[in-house]
Image (cartoon, rainbow, N blue to C red; front, side, top):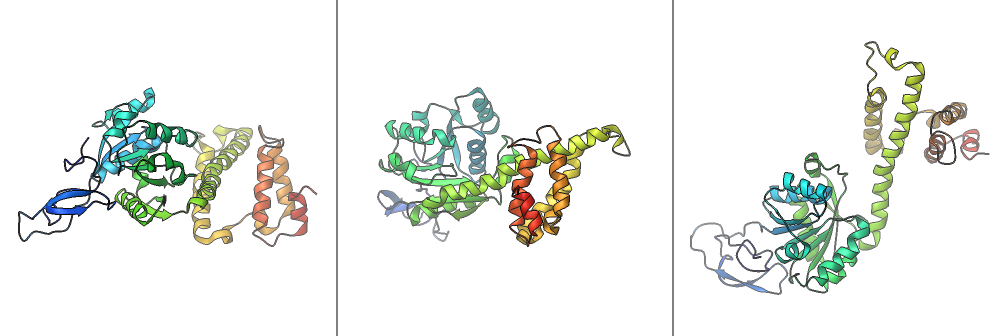
Length: 350
């Protein structure tokens, strides 16, 4: 597969109508292979290079890969081919990347200037090994993965064969819909590269997708990923617990009688949405000073009653029940306050 210029394997060479488009020779983006340039046939026009357009291959067409593929196409790149092995991935690729061919891994690798590896974290190492062993990888190919906890060390098998390795992780959750692509706009991406050239290319790709690149060191990728998982994934567990407890309270009183119009559908979610949204906005703006409620007030008796009520709902008791989760998080919240001894003793189980 040739680049958009017709030159095989040159990811950033593109004729532009400027001095670098026609004439002698110039180094490519990696400075190690020349490509032909000729003099400007249109004197007086700009000699600035146009943005490089890349032929992109995606491995595989999951939620993340498809969203990034759409975002790259919106930026003017071409997703030429994807690996899509499951029926769900094939359907997703057909619906959202309809102009992309579905090919096997070797064929996708062979025709790509930017290879986006978006597979589950546990499979990344094996897929990288498969790419390196394919014999289809050309020197100068950009190979970028989207695993949050990994940097570029895991790409050593392909960088040893002349690829440029990048780690590009969008700090966003994906559900598999077209909204995923829209959410990438203004999202932060953790980028890791082996050198400033790689960082510049990673940053450019993220900026083209509308995101904000943030440098994360190789040694800090696991901590970065843990922070995101704690803040986002565990938030889902927390809200699901709150919905379950609130539904138990609503159902005990009678759902149809709970509102003036008798509409009890998703009532717990309706109650929580403005409260949780305001709390999230407050903590992101104010930090721990946004804390309110009985722990912030040091009200040990109110917390004691909360724990007793939560133990009585389905899923509320036991070492891993809702009440225990409440106690653990309340103890963390108390660390942010001047909590009285009675409250600390209660939360410590003393």
